[in-house]
Amino acid sequence: MKNALVSKLDVVAIMVAVAVMVTGCKPKSESEPSKTAGVAERTGGALDRAAEKTADVAVSVAKMTAEVAVSVADKTVEVATNVADKAVDAAKATAATTKDVAGKVVEKTGRLLEKAGDSVEQAGTVMQK
Image 1 (cartoon, one colour):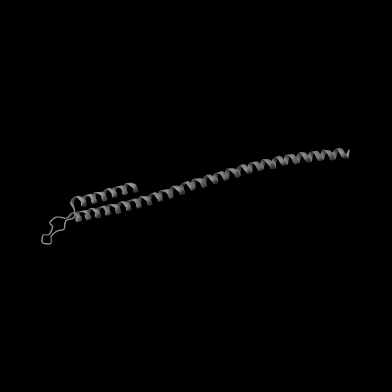
Image 2 (cartoon, rainbow, N blue to C red; image 1 turned 90 degrees about the horizontal axis):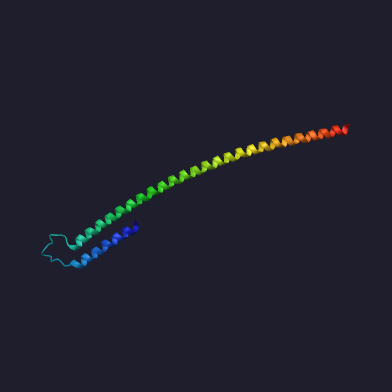
């Protein structure tokens, strides 16, 4: 967009320079007022219009840039929220799995202690006889 704008301004500047070279700058006599605008006046008007259009384009570009920035910010918040939600879900799943595994470990340890207790009891019975 910037290159296109610079290119258009270059073309306008070249056209103005060629127009001035072709027509020349003739001094007007003071006794005879000009009824039509001179080349310099027309060129000045063209430059004024070009400057206005350039300003309008700059404002439009600034507005579009602001809109894009807001859109990117909104999308970033949305993605961050999704990532956070997935992290919470993963943490919950990990906690549930850890709880299940811990429960199984406690249960197995209990069975092993019970078997060890039975073995100690049997050993005590054998020693008493």
